[in-house]
Length: 112
Length: 111
Image (cartoon, rainbow over all chains, first blue to last red; front, side, top):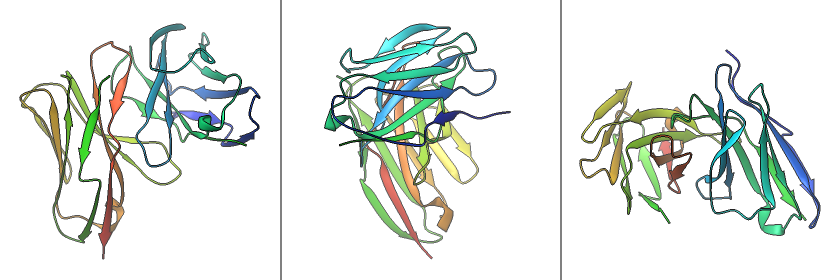
């Protein structure tokens, strides 16, 4: 059974740029959630995708957008990067929008 | 919005001691979960609770779903050095899309 994988591991961008983060869900999982984790804090929910449709969104601006593909992998896109977007971005997968989520190792984004 | 308050923020204990931490919410959840996060990794699910009053164990870990549905507790018995890490509680509701996380309890175990 393959776990959740994320790419890239680390990323450095400058303010105003755009970034795409990728996630492959665990085998058999059809739901992917994205979280932002600032240093010293718990993960904050960005949005969830279930069978290629958005199923819930947290308090993040529209420049945070996502996509889920037919194989249930997912992308998180962030436009017009701001310094405060620097964080660990976590992807989690589950079955049928279930709360038992399995997390990937995260992508560390630094915005300069 | 929903907020989870986790306490204590950090704990320094001796190997072999028992540990208790808790999580309270201003809102009701129908699912409570406990995760552990090691440096440089994503959170790992430890225990999931689905029913008010439920008490569930996973090895040396025991968690309870509070009867008010607004709180949960995690106990670790006979702590060992590999218990070191950050423990997060999370609350969720069926098919609602999101889990709301607390800000974690950092556990340090002295050998």
